[in-house]
Image (cartoon, rainbow, N blue to C red):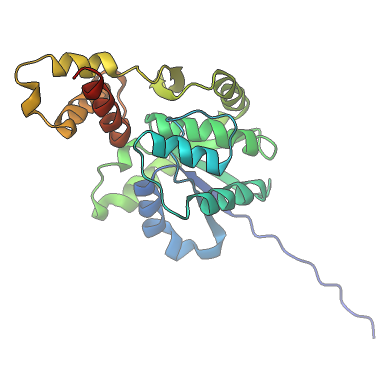
Length: 243
């Protein structure tokens, strides 16, 4: 009796990438339970807008962040390696959705990930995660569905080229200008901090209140957010230097 050949049927998945912990949690809560194994969510818990990018190794990046006041978990290096391994193992048959707002750490994350994604897809679907930052849980599903339906097709080549340039510049800070990460000196925010310290009774103002004001000014100028831990670090550096 002739044996029947078995054929493996590949089930197309939606691959989702994000670079913000809150967005990751919201996506998992909204979709993961119902989509199960047909959804693959990759998350990189790393602020690539702070610290030098070359060489891009987990241990080096961990040191870059911690030297600038950004805390990391003991599991940072292991989870970093897992993310890189998973992104390299993605199938070009899947659909890829990249979630990103105007925040520099997310934009820089997209640039880095594009160097891996470009070998699998020429284009991905780009979802603006900005509207999810303050969404109420009851409205999360409707907002996520609307964002997915409006996802823009984005070419990866310019992002991969941008990442190469950022690595070559290898500065210790990146801000977001016109929707793209841009290298700036690590002292970029120091004049803002100095101006606030020069106001009346600076000794009565703690570092956190000054960092919050700098972050608010950044939002007004560039329509995004900066890492508050890094800003606290710069406030401390400037205050000590001017004592």
